[in-house]
Length: 90
Length: 390
Image (cartoon, rainbow over all chains, first blue to last red; front, side, top):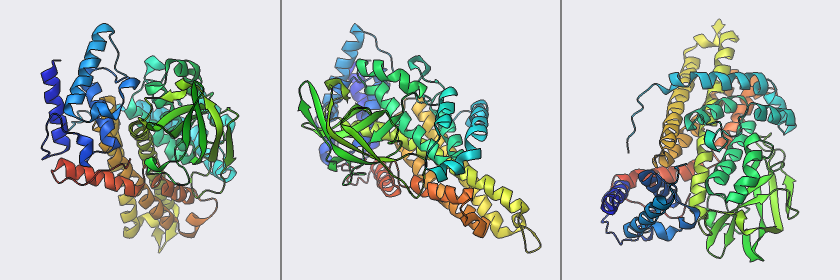
């Protein structure tokens, strides 16, 4: 999946979850007072479902999920890692 | 996100349900009242669960689990919940710990603990609640400080299901980077337990208060990343909520079956109770609630099997509905049996006490109302504050 497709999917997911949100790619979603820990886990599951891989422990920092940009960067790292070593979705 | 249930799940699940039901009817139900009075599940029953391979239904077969999927996991927990909520509670926390170990545990932790956890040789305990922290995880006071190459854990955990016998403790503690999660060997000399007796419900689930004092663990006892505890809690509690939701369906079913049996033989006013329309009303509510709650659980389980993130919200709704419906069903089941339903030997009295616990554990009714309302408002464009609730 290309980076632009991933960005679009992530934006659509967040916009469905928070209808009416004025979302920019650098907006800190967690600074709005809307998101809770349940949402952070939803994001983890969504990215795993999207990329068909598991987010490794060292990438579970909240900072990787604060903005669309950060999540796209995370997705790029996971995709690159998978190219080096194919992983299996749990 | 909408999901189409394209096949009649209840029909597809008949073989698994029949197997689980037969196990519960043979091994669990006949003595469940005795476990309640004893305040413990006898070792031979725990061994029977092991022999039947039921401790690891949360894991896929490739990693040592039964591999039947999360819908069947739900059916198992419903059937066990129908027989004994205490045993179901122990299955719940064991599944939560096993899930966390498999999902986020280091290779060395998995190497050491996965096999004994899968077999049930070692049982899991979930150490989150403290004297001043429960629903508000961010308030917890247990600390994990750097010590040598690992951590030193100090603090007091309360109401740990299975805490009297758990060999592996999933423990939430505060570190420099925030709330973090550790898997602690229950045999560590820094771990002491105080059994809790005389609980209102799930009396046989062998609760304990667990104290960590100068408890030293290696660095790889940390699961996930340091500071990722709130997110991990959401994932682990999702498994627990799903189990409790399904167990609540089991309570409703048990209430329904007990009520129908009693109403068929108890005669009042010239005929059996079942001929009285007000009794029929109570039975109707139980029958419909059982089916509605079961479908909500199946939906949540189906989403889990599809790795769909919508499962988290679906599980909240299932647990909210099923646990409150279980309380209604148990109240009505006692009402139908009258004074005999209040007696010390009455199964429905046990269901009543157990159902109350279901409204509290793994997300109280009020916490779930906040989460479900937030979710609904946010999806419809009327955001409310989410904050740090779980």
